[in-house]
Image (cartoon, rainbow, N blue to C red; front, side, top):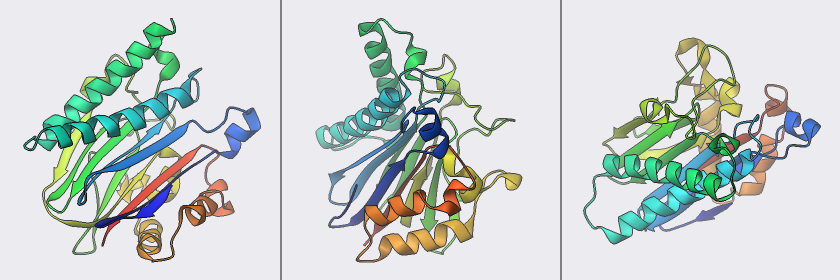
Length: 250
């Protein structure tokens, strides 16, 4: 989905990977976003565990509920600390997953998912993450910065999920207290293209700069973003589901 709004232009897409098509598991990634105010964006991306029976349901709930929770709190309370709010939102989302699992009499692990959640305004960016996704901000000086960088395990496809018992200790929350030009949220399926994993997961400039330039174009649309995520350039580097959400300030 994508739309141009008063202060933010947002493009987002989640695409099924070739491995999931081969196994007929469907896309287990999700993304969501909304405006809590004309200049305040709330966005999330989630990656359901490939081994979890209800991974797609878990990621969809995590992304949509966390965004709705933060937006509700921001609208209800004029003064709220963004870092505390993000911590509350991660806990509330985890509780929502547990509630669904109890209702359906399934283990919470059946809904296993990562979650990256962001609040962005002219005053700065605040991000929280459990898992191995990425939040990247494009600063006004042109540099790229990874925020609340998710854990990088020794092996690919290893991570801590929001449904894990150790989720709270794995939750990273961070702020960039200055205005940024744009932000990108992505799931780990894009890691081999978007990050320099030999340098601690530093954002890969040749990947992000053209995409952020594309997102700022007046005629940019989510269909084009989907085409890119489905392209051979991506498919030859990963068979995992991929999600990318781009947001630029006008």
